[in-house]
Image 1 (tube, rainbow, N blue to C red):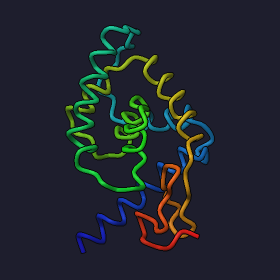
Image 2: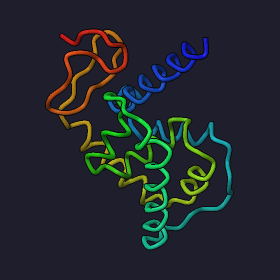
Image 3: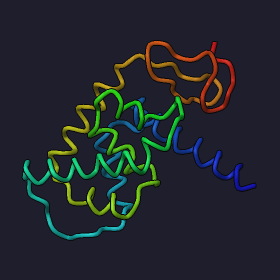
Length: 160
């Protein structure tokens, strides 16, 4: 029973991430606005851009991302790992933040980022969706890279 719940949740997260990457959510800004409306606000102050502070925050977020996800996940359809491994670290941080699996420490650091971070994340998203990938016709999971597998890493069905 628990495994079914986990697999169902994983499938929903993958489908939601695919919709963002494929543009089904109209655009990233509307997705971001919707996410901000549903999120519990942690601070009521505007965060001013500060490249030095953001650089330190991003470094800390990357370490947390590695500890909390990248080193633990071996899913071939994982958008977060593909983004991270291809150098789209800002987009990987954004994906992990919206996955629901991030720790409170990760979220606390993420909440301190300035708008410049999100502009860069959007640029990385645009570049990432141009990378070679194959969509599973059965579950809509995406396998990234030139040498896509013959079988889906999410549903294990054959990819034609």
